Image (cartoon, rainbow, N blue to C red):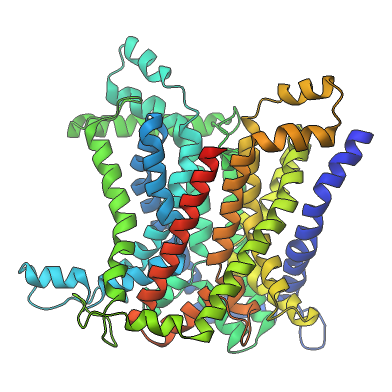
Length: 570
């Protein structure tokens, strides 16, 4: 009984945060879609979606774009994930740093980088014209391809880090054993390694798809009206038309699509895969999923043999795989690097190569109270969000380690629930509640909203560390008379400090880059840096944003390098 009560107390902060500012706001907001002006139940708003036809077309377009982004993210990210998972310890840290730097950089910064690259005066068009491939600059922006490329660039790191968690747990000896039994390398890779890594692939696909489904930055900045996504309509209904009931129906449609995919994923590979655990269930418990993966492996093995491709071998790796991983890294990093020279341009518009080189835009930023206030506010909110997430996630993770069976599954599902809901749904639901509580335009509202979104990432990172922690050390401390609190304070927490630092970095970076909540919850003079950057990007495309993006990139790089040093020292 004492153990059960202690677990309840450890889960209480998480239950309070998610109950009051996640489950209740979403339920309260979504019910508005079925209520008319008098408070009576109605299906008028739901019928409007089907009768108009436009909204279903936009939803289908959103799903189509998200599926393409998901497919490309997994395919592009797989070689890099493979090399990272199988690299020797000396090179692994270098690969991880090259992948994490783009991951930690802002979504908006990377999206803006593609505006620079694909623009008529950008480096890609300049190269095509200079090389004679094209006589004049091409219209590469404002189309389907630009949206998909921009979103893929942003989401590939998500896919890589999710797949690595499963790949690192694959026994390398299985490939060797397959070879001793007569399997050719191509057969061993596609039938064994690819099959065992499929839980990670499906987990990556789930996270990428749900994140892509809630995107609005890339479609708004890189696409045209034909690439409008459902989240853009939600923003329009709330900010321009103030039609809360219809916005609730659109969010319900978005949430329903995400939940259907989540249920399918849970049936096929299991929730535990999201934390990087490839247990018996998540590795493909159903016979149907095993047959599908096996058939896919046979098909790819046959295709590879026809094309005479040489798949990698864990521990050694084919040179071609490493070159593919290098290309992936360049795809992630080069757009960010190109922002730096653009930021020194003295012109009012974007052009390549930069001309009238100077510090004009940096001087404007550093002398602007609006930009400086937004930067300080963003860092303060990110710091407070990190503290709140750690205060909630650390005790919940300790309690989760003591759960088994259905209780563990239910607790895990509850803790990662915000991860499986498009951020736009969370942001609009919180705005609906904040408007009644007076939290719009407050630091407290921003911190709470950011913490709800960042909490699943922090929780997963901490339980992943606890999975590798030797609990016999706790038992030894207890046998010497240490209380549970003293054991946690003097033994457990110091030994997992590096993992907690990484989890804290997740919260800090996610908060610093969060635009969905800031778009609604920060008002007037309380804008955060992403909100101010978004306003600037929608009004004009100038080197000012390149300068802001460069400063944000430098700040985040410093934070990542400092965290890596602290973790190494720990």
